Picture 1 (tube, rainbow, N blue to C red):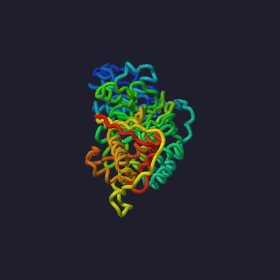
Picture 2 (cartoon, one colour):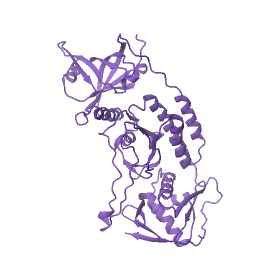
Picture 3 (tube, rainbow, N blue to C red):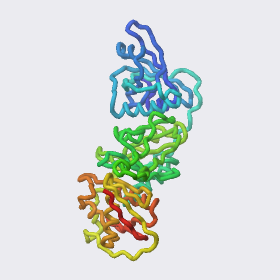
Picture 4 (tube, helix red, strand yellow):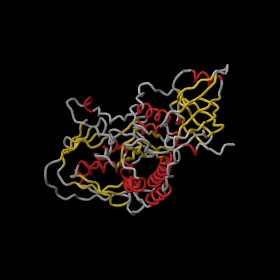
Length: 449
């Protein structure tokens, strides 16, 4: 039995260099062809990309045995895999992961408009052979990833609030893994879209920018609940920017821009998206990218999956903690606000989708917009500055879902949008499940039906 394992030659399966596949027809006639992907499934199986109805495909359906030659991208050492065809998958996590990776390979080789994945052919690996030759020296072993994971875990374990957790996760990626561009997105269970709650390394934060399920590696990772990693710049999996609000159609004459720009790199060459899960339920996505080719290996993917698991467990724990756990009073006090001076700030609320505009600047929409409108209305009419999460959850007019309302994430999103775009109105956490609305100017409230 060969001492070689798929794990020991896994760099050969990164898609950097096309593999060579040999098959035989029923009459014994051999056929050799290049193949785009040899995709690691587990230690006993690989998947090959089914893209064309060609001689290779015809042969493998009549004779399920094949040999594939793969090349180590650093040492130039060849390995021969002896395979047996088992099945073809045309949907699901494996198919979507290969589809995303193939898009990167295609654009890198100038074949973005030619390559199209029809299926993932799953093969059993029966034998691995090293081909004789004079390979280059092995690259030094990467070290420190386990230590990096430990330090990430220790830092995240000390977080007591969602904003701390988001900041600690992004800082850990930079400090311990030298990842310079990253973002964390949360799932809105109402709209089934992902919205950015934290980012690092970009010119603009993109807080509040949205991505549809299935859009780009982020959307695919979310939809299939599986990591998606590509090592080359891709044009087939471009991101959609936030969809322009339908306000113009619903309110004639309105020309305001309700788009929050997506903060990603203009020309990413490596991308890795990992779903954030808890008990099999999708909470969001942890996403990293780089301007360098092949920046993220399968080892980086393993570490980020572990970090995302810790992140998901921490988010779930925070959501399960009662809002009033640290307080004897379940209701937020009503307090009079001090007199304010300065220019009047117009706050417009549009019922069409809950959008909020501060003068002519778009702030937020949806449930977060409804929450903000409640806060400023209570402030203007009753002089309130103190609020609690509990009272928001009990307010049926806000449209919070009955299960997994993500209220903490929505409040964090709103707080960060205000911090970036409205210094006159700020939200300040005053305790567990409590916060204060600080308003430094007169408000003009306009409710647009």
